[in-house]
Amino acid sequence: MNKPLPILLLALLVGAAQAQEDDMIFSHFKAERLEYETNGGLQLFKWDVQHWIGNDEHKLWLKTEGDYAGDQGIFGRADLQMLYSRNIDTFWDFQIGARRAFEPERTYDAVIGFQGLAPYFIEVDSAMFITENGNVLGRLTLGYEMLLTQRLILAPRIELNVAAKDIQNRAVKAGITEFEAGLRLRYEIEREFAPYIGVDYVEEESLLEHQHSVRGVVGLRVWY
Image 1: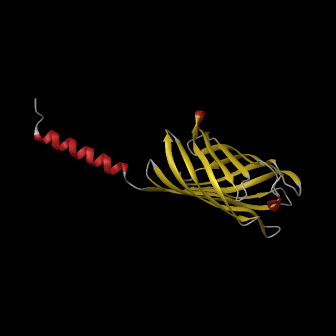
Image 2 (image 1 turned 180 degrees about the vertical axis):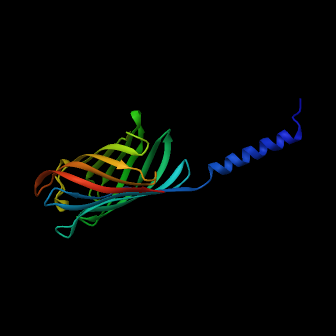
Image 3 (image 1 turned 30 degrees about the vertical axis):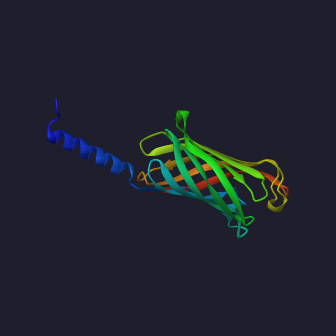
């Protein structure tokens, strides 16, 4: 039996609307960490900011991460990544692009990584950095959120930076170059605006020194 004309028109309109929705461009900005860390002598300002624009399949990502030592008036680490991101599975994106490091050395690296949501709702952000000399570095960040109330969230976080071998001009030592484990308790005044307090354990290893410390943290998480 032939379908009535109104039903055919409705089907065509729904299909066109769905295709148009798939092609719609969205954007999302998130300052995951805008924070101040201290252990008494250390005064460190840190940021971890990401922004993407695109659709469900293809996105352009900008990521920047770094820290500034207020007691010394210097940047410890600062970089900017520009990445093309392709959705490869539910909750998972493959990313490729470039990183510009501003501190401690002004260098360019190629970037290959994966970002997504692992089982048990663990947020994963991983990247491999390939230097101009073919040396390989890596960064892995894991995060999790525990809802204590509708507004109060406890967020454990781990970040691991590694190097395949020594890199003299960056004072990088092979192995684990930085390990950071932290716990942050934030209060969502609005979902998009949440101050937090917390504690971090940080261990750093370079060709110049080895240091570790426990630090208090106060900061702000913002997204839109």
